[in-house]
Every structure is written in C-alpha cells, then in structure tokens.
Amino acid sequence: MTNTKNAVITGASRGLGLALARGLAADGWSLVIDARDGDALRAAAAGLPPEAAVTVLPGDVTDPAHREAIARAAADLGGPDLLINNAGTLGASPLPSVADYPIAELRDAFEVNVLAPIALTQLLLPALRRRGGAVLSVTSDAALEPYAGWGGYGAAKAALEQASNVLAAEENLLRVWWVDPGDLRTRMHQQAYPGEDISDRPLPEAAVGAFRKLIAERLPSGRYRAAELMPSRALS
Amino acid sequence: MSVVPTDVADARVALDFSLPPEREAHEPPEARGLPRDGVALMVSRAASGEISHRAFTDLPALLLPGDLLVVNTSATLPAAVPLPGGLAAHFSTPLPEGDWLVELRAAGGAATVPYPGGSPGQRLDLPGGAVLTLGDRFTQRLWRARLSTAVVPYLLRRGQPIRYSYVSRPWPIEAYQTVFGTRPGSAEMPSASRPFTPEVVARLVARGITFAPITLHTGVSSLEGDEDPYPEPYDVPPATARLVNLTRRHGGRVIAVGTTVVRALETAARLAGPGLAGPGTGLAGPRAGLAGPRAGLAGPRAGLAGPSAGWTGHIVTPEPAGRLLAVDGLITGLHEPRSSHLSLLAAFAGLDLLGRCYAAAIERGYLWHEFGDLHLLLP
Image (cartoon, rainbow over all chains, first blue to last red; front, side, top):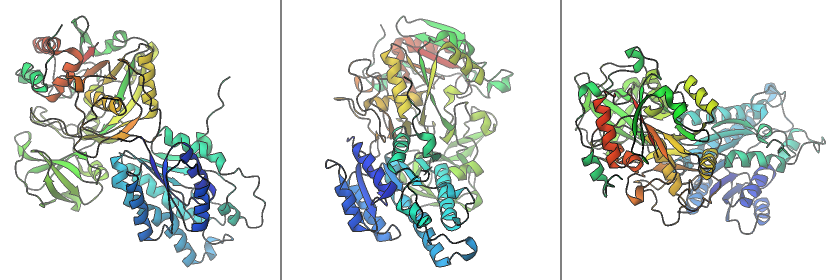
C-alpha cells in the first residue's frame, strides 16, 4: 500500500495547468502531464521540484492514441487518483460573434473542450473509481453568462459543465468538480483580448490555493468558483 | 467480564436464537401510529454490563457533550427491478469497472425469494428497453452483471425499494430515506439513522454533540447466515477524519450511527497503521484518498490514519485483527440470528452482554429489522 497520489493534468505547459502541476508536485503528488507544445512542456517539467515523479507526454488530447498513452502512464504510476481536465482552446481569436463563428473552428473548440475531456475521463474511470478518485474540469463563467464574443468557447464550456454535472449524478463513488478559476493572466485570456493590457488579472498561481483546498478536503461533487474556496483570513 | 469468542463463527453460534414473527417490524412506525422517532432504544454499557430500556428521543441525555455521532450520508436507491416472468433483479453494489453485483430473486408469496437460476452470458430484458447481461457468479447469491445504461439514474426512474417477506406491503421510497441521506447509492436503507428527525438532531446539537458524515453504499442484506459481507464502496472525508481524531484525543466518544459507519471508520483506521492487517477485499484494495493528514496518533486512542475512500472488505469482529480502533460506541437496529452483524456487535459489547441484550429485547417486545427499534452500545 502506498501513500503516493497520482494526478493527470492536461495542458500543463503554461498558465493554470502549469501552476496546478507546481502546486500538486509541491504537495507530493506524482504527475502525468501533457500539452501539445512538447518543448514548452519539457521546459515546464524541468521547473518542477526535482523530487517529484513526473511523466511528460507531449501530444494532443483530441488524439485517441495520445489519450491511451496518458492512461498507460497513469497506470504505470499505480493508477490515477485525480484527473484535471485543464487543456482547452479559446476557439477563434479575436472572438467572433455567434452569427459569424466559423463552424470548423467551433467544431475544433468542441473537440478540445468537450469531447477530449469526456473521452479521457471515460478511459480513466475504472481506475479512478477503484481509488475513490476525482475528476476536476476547468470551466469558466463564460459557460453561464452571455458575454458577447464568447459564444463558441462559452457553449463548449457549458457542454463540459453539464457533462460533469451528469457524471456526478451517475458516478456516486467519485468526486466530480467543475471549477471556474476566474479571470487569470494567461495566454488564453490574452488571446481573448489581443493587444489589450491584462496585467490587472491575477497570475494563475493565485487560484492554486483554491484547487488545493478542493482536492485536499475532497469537497462534495459540484460547481465551484475558485474565489469562494479561498481560505478566509485566519482569526488573530 | 464476558467471554471473548476466538472465532467469528463462535459469535454467530453463541447468538443463535429464534426470532418470533411478532418481533419483526412489518411496517414503518408511522404506520403504527407513532412518529418516526417514536421507537424504543435499548442501552447497553460494556464497562458495567448494564442494560436499560429507554425511548429513542432520550438519546441526547444518554450522550455527553464532546461525543461525536458519525452518520452515513448514503441515500437508499429503489434497487429492485421487476423482470418479465416473475423475476426481480436487486442491484446491490457497483464495482470499479462499471459492473454491478446483482441478486436475482423470484416471486414468492408476498415478496421475493432467492432465485437459483441464471447462467453466465445470459441477457435479461428490463423495463424501458434496458438489458442486463450476467457475467460470472461473485458469490452463491450475487452475479457480476452489466446493465446497458447508467444504473443509478435507471433505478431512480424504474426501480422499487427492496422489500423482504416480513414487510407485508410496498412502501414508497421516502419511507426508506433517512434525514442524512444525500448521496443515492445504497441498495437497502442504512436504517440505524431512520429514527433521527430534525428535532432530535437539533437537541443533540444543542447538547454539544457533534456530527460528522461518511458515505458507505450498503448492498443487499439477504445473505445467508454464514456468508461474510462483500466489499462495499465507502468514503471517509478529511474533515470527518479530523473530527474523529480530535474527539478521541479529548476523551470524547466516537459513536457510529449504523454498522456501515463502523465498517468505514475501521477501514480508515487501518490504512496506515503499522503492523495492522489491511482490510481484505476481493477487489484492488482500498487505499488512501486524495490527500490529508497521514500521521495518526500512537496508542490505544489512535483513531484514524486519515481520510480514505475506495472499496472495503474489512470485517469487524471481536478477534484482535478485527478489533475496534476508531469507534467507541454504536447505534444500530436489532439483527437477525446468525448474521455477521452480530460478531460486529460483539466487538463492542462482548458476547455475554450481547446475549443478555438480545434475550431482553425478545422478552420486552423490541422490534427487529429496518423499521424496528434501536440499540445503543456504549463502552
């Protein structure tokens, strides 16, 4: 019996995915991390704590063979306790209106943001069930709010949220969380606002505490906003 | 001091008794003109060997401020599905691969009786177009089987509460829910918490009694007397593990509401305990959950190793390997002769006291089964 906990994090080469990889590695987790940009992913892995067991798998989450490789790597660690569906795509940039959304790009957004995380979840489910594990999918307030221009990304995230919602109802042995991290200073957020200054948004590291709390406390399945999970100020 | 049995079977044989039909609760107390919390409560104290007879609503006065009641949040599924030809499928327990343990039953008088038939690979048509495919036999009674659709939503739409012959007519699923049940998943009601009403809970809280949740989805109870329980999915969350340890560290008592809670907490207590036998499960063993404190305290008040989740095959017995590490007391119903639950109870009360309790319960007209009376076993 081992106390090591194993997590799969998709899209871990930068932004929130990398911040989560750093946070979990610091907490002693073994990781399987993936991203499309292999160089960026290897550079990211090199910056993780040297004692952390990290399996680096460059690839595209929409590729079934790559997902199989992720599942094998997780099994090699002893099995996954946590899947973080973080990899995502904004879709077309700058953000087009629904009226003008190129359908090919919309389809791509759904492939990456909805179908790939569902497929990866399916693949890992038996092992996750066995270990009383958890599935965490990163979502956005754009899934709920009618922000002009966010129709493609928002519709895909809404689909991911509802798939998570139903998964939580069907998988009563797992924790299923879908988490809105809030606006963060990430490359994706910059793509949504090309040329604009987004330096007022917090760095992704600011949201990691909320995720760590959710994971460590094994909070009930459901939708969470990172802001509401941040620890309240300690009484002095 | 009571005789400590050296073998699980001893407890069952020593507590073999015949249960007169009039001692069985045939319907919910509400149907007998009583409130939900209007059941009787037998209290036994292991240290003194005393037995007293109280009302369940006396519970706040029987516990002390600082005691912790651990409750099971598993809600009852309508887990019985009628099949064409007079058969019924009782969905007992999910397995990690998505299969379920399923018991086949045949119509027999007012309820159902075990059905010995069925063959591996057999496909059974269920209402609504679902198909149940039998795999292999998991035990003499239970099949490993696969349903063609998600089981829990299917049961919520198509199932009925499991009912045995001692309950003379069907009751709606609400009769089988407890005030703590929030996560559907049990084939049968975790019935020790059935009499808890919001009023009783409020009075316990006002007295300084703390509550903490676990989840254990309990399977069918229709096993033969000599069958051991099979592995069940459970979840002891971090906040509960902390409360258990805090309570014990400060001299409070951890009281399990139901045998399911004992099983979950005693599993969690064994996960990191050096030199202790791990829970024996027929599946890949349960292991530590996602995170949390790993370091338990040393010594007899050790408490939990930490939070954990998975499947547990742990069996609580009076034997050293099965002895209690985390739980001090138990609230439970009255159990059938020769059931494995009796050896769990013997771990709390010892065989001699337990035998006197059951003799008193029969003599004084306590009611057995899920709609019956309760027994508080204190240290």
